[in-house]
Length: 310
Image (cartoon, rainbow, N blue to C red):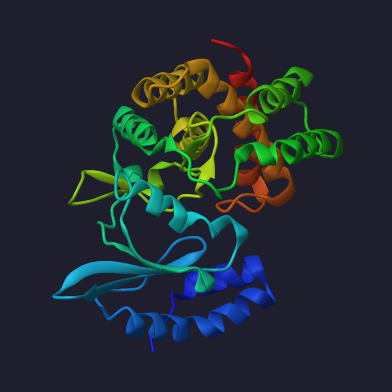
C-alpha cells in the first residue's frame, strides 16, 4: 500500500476536517485500484500539491505517466475537461480519467516549475505565451466566470464594510467597476483559471506545459491577475514596486497579446480580493503575526497602486 506524504495529510485535515480525514483513509485503496485498472506500476516518490497527490507511474512498455487523485471539490470538477479541450497543446496530455474519484492519468513532465527561473521577464513571458495558446473557443458545459460576478461584487462590498482597513474608497469602486463592466460580459474562451509559475512545469515534448487548470470560460486577461498575485513574494523585494508591477503587466500583456488596461483591471480586482482574504483567513504561508500583517499591507498597497490607470 502506497504511503501518503505526512505534510499533505496534515494540511488536508486542517483544511477539510472530518471529511478530509475520511478521504485520506480511503486514498491508498483508491490509488491501488486505479493503478490496477489502468495497468500501471509506481515509478517514483509520491508527490503532492495543495489538494491532491501525484504518483509517478509506468505503463505499456515503460511509458511514463502520473496518477493524480484530488480531494473531491467543485473547483476540481472541470480540470479533465480542460485537458481534453487542449489536447496537449500548451498543457499536459490526459490519458485516462475517473471523474467520480477525481482522478486522472496524465502525461509525466519534469518536477521543476517556472517559479524556479530567476529571470522575472522570462517567467512572465512564458506564462503570457501559454495563456495565449490556452485561450481557445470554449466547449459547452464548462463553468462561466461571468456566473461568479454577482457573488464577487457582494463579497467585495461585504468585506469592505465588515473588515478593518484604511483603503481609499476609489480602490473598492475600481474593483466593483471591473466586475460590472468586465465580469458580467466575458468572451466564450477557455481559460486556465489559475495560471501562475508553479502551475507551469518543464517538459520534454515542449519546453513548458501547464497543469492544474480550473477550466473556466471567460476573459483570458483574468489570468493576468492570478499571475501577478503569484509574483507577490518577488515583488516584495523590488526596489521600485511601481516599476516592477508595471513591468509584469507590460510583459505579460505583450506575450499574451491582450489589452494591457484590461489585464491591469483584473490584477487590481485580484489584489483587493487577496487583501480582504488575508484579513479573514490569513495566507497559506502566514496565518498570523507580523508576516501576515506585512503581506496584507502589501496586498493593500498593490490594490491601490493598480487602481491608478497607467
